[in-house]
Image (cartoon, rainbow, N blue to C red; front, side, top):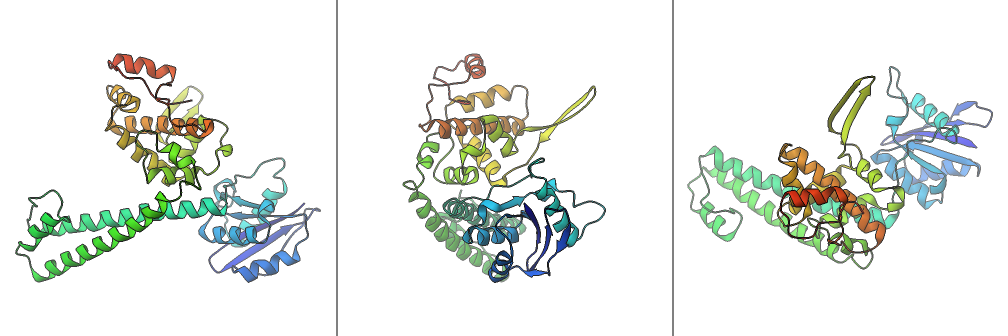
Length: 359
């Protein structure tokens, strides 16, 4: 095997090649364009494999390799698993280390990231975009509330962006600069609201292409928006050998440090997909508002744990339930439940059947 290591940057790439005899040589710096990659691929023999780092520029490079039919010979590598961020770091050294790690990947597997197929990438982009628009809308609302607070105004209505709220805003005597700023924020809010509705129209229309979404929405706390976020971040369930593997991927598990007799459990690891972790916590917040096993388990945990720790535990339970629903190919069944949650329900006097936490 001929191993190619590519240190990808926004405008150009550094390419190192390790031949079968172990010798490493470098190509001339390559433009990170579709034409540049096609020119490189034309020079490489069929037994070549390519490793490049996970990044936004690397995303573009992987899409080009996919179009060229090289995806099965491309490796999208987490650079945290490559010893390049040490005392010495430069582009040629990074590319060289990637090539050398790739050449021995049959003995020591590379820390690879999963590059989703086009349909999952599209769903992931649209789901993330809708969430990002909601974040912008929240920032607009917070900014307006901040302006009102600066002038000692406390709204007498629950929603200042509604009809009654806008009437209340119009009746307030405010400086001209503040008035113009508030009017701008209202226009931005209305624009974002329209864009959010357009994004949600697409998410409503993809159930036929992704039947997993309808099954996920049967789980308490998971609705129209969270289902595509969760499914697009998971992508293929075959990547995870068990529910525990998926839970570990979410980064919601407690960190652990052990050495000899010392064992210290810390906060959650926060590894893996940030969007998946956010979606599961948001789903946990929604599930807590209903009457279900997740809400009962949260109340049981709150006897000894603070609220964030208890919510993280419920989010982990939701992740296990997601795995079970996707693995079985069936809708969420509240008549199934894990053994350890029976005691929780009984201790809380639950009269309703539990929830399938870990199928």
